[in-house]
Image (cartoon, rainbow, N blue to C red):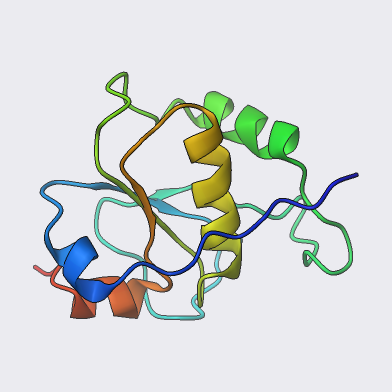
Length: 123
């Protein structure tokens, strides 16, 4: 089972320049590492059954299936999307999978707190 590569965390300026991005929270349900959830974000956990990646790596196919089941991805493949977890590892892997689906404007935001610090998701 090949491990999904993790995209690097995007620069704050790149995140702040996005208008109306879809934010996908790749953390496990109830997890608050990296800050509270961004208002309007969609939780699509990268882990399978809350098992850490070091114990049970998630495949691209498994995460694609989760995204399809969530029905959260826009039709527009150029739409702005930010993924995150608690620090950027699983968020980066989510970015890689979504890019593999043909989306061209996908960014790893790192954590909810770093996304808010970039000016996204502030009330």
